[in-house]
Image: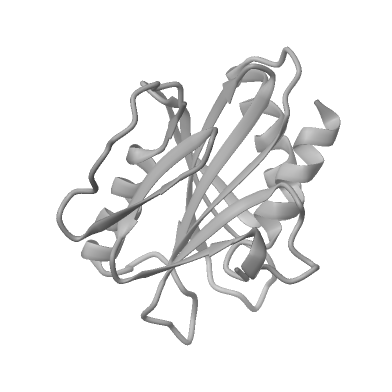
Length: 180
């Protein structure tokens, strides 16, 4: 469990640098594409950039499965989604949440937990914070999910005041995540 949380934290800190449903969608909704592998599936807008392991530099942790980011780059921060995985052993989603929140609280300045809810795909939590005193405060929303001893964390991040269409696209991606 400690290894999983440390891996989650390492990948979480790279944000911006780069569920339990069992049915798969055969076709993407209009204006969207599907990323799918043997373990998971997610839809994302046509105009966004998909980065997979083959695209990552060596400083991106091996636990990172993919990153999807807005192609419209910002001088402040580019909205994005990241998916990581790691061994969760017999940890529950609540265990994963508690460990992740403890790690995030110690790594973000001006940390503020906003809410946590159970969804059909896992446990979702929202929070704000910034990595350094000079960086902007960011909004984060994470979906924690697990299957057969493997934990998954899907994280979206964006600046407060981000365009509503971008926030909607991020939420739609997060909600489309499913495990096979």
